Image (tube, rainbow, N blue to C red; front, side, top):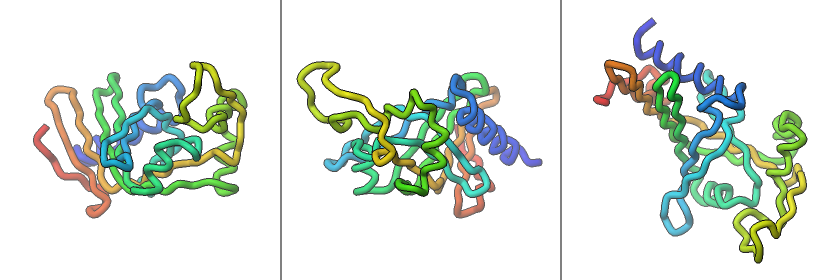
Length: 181
């Protein structure tokens, strides 16, 4: 196995642990979109699913959130993950498909009951309110969305000595090209 392939495998293994282990550093990742007025918007989201063979990552959202509106206008995003244990930084970018309705029912069914309240607050996320707790959280499947980022490229940095950096691109079947770190 080549060094680039080994790093790619380590990256996917760390991301998979983020999906499976709630306390793993790659569980909480940063998702960046672009606002209507052209500014970057970054927020922390939980990595919920992935497919290393098809090259996609999934997070979830209230369908009424700003990130969903931003992705509706411009369906491109970047995702940043960092694992201090392995010293791997993952920067993935690609197109995002907003999935909702019965197709995401299996994902909804995997969300713990106590966590479903994140999808259905009233008023909608980002709405001005009079007091800090002037909202109600009620689970609502109709407000649940899965955001699937189909990876176009991953910039992977390994900060173990010696530092290494490689970019994996869908266009070259994620074979990888070394970059100066």
